[in-house]
Image (cartoon, rainbow, N blue to C red; front, side, top):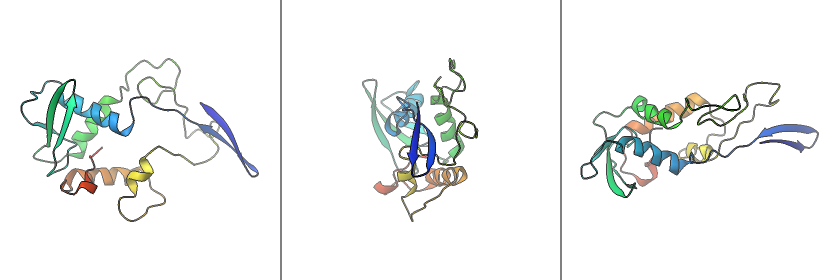
Length: 163
């Protein structure tokens, strides 16, 4: 949905959409479902997004699975799982689409949006685990995700997945 927001003398065009099924917890669960598709629930399942030294026990489709890290951490392998759940090949009835067939305007098109403000739920919270960072780039997020793949997973506060 598009909204017009007036603040002082400025007018902003805003776009808002809730991506049902792609919140932090449900998206993570979908990534575990990918790994569990052909797995035996009675044996630990290696998952590229589980940090070294950590394991994740999860109920999926009435079965309990234990997910453990792969011997070699890999941001790229975790990222592959993340891309898989996005259903980028799903039919897009109203173009352009972001993922899963959901419309999203081009956020870099100046005729659509006239400012550089982008906000995504929960992203800011996840970036503030260390020293406060008021402004981050996409490369900063990728760097932090790659570090999460190799960070020890014993500290509950660092139970961060690679993607």
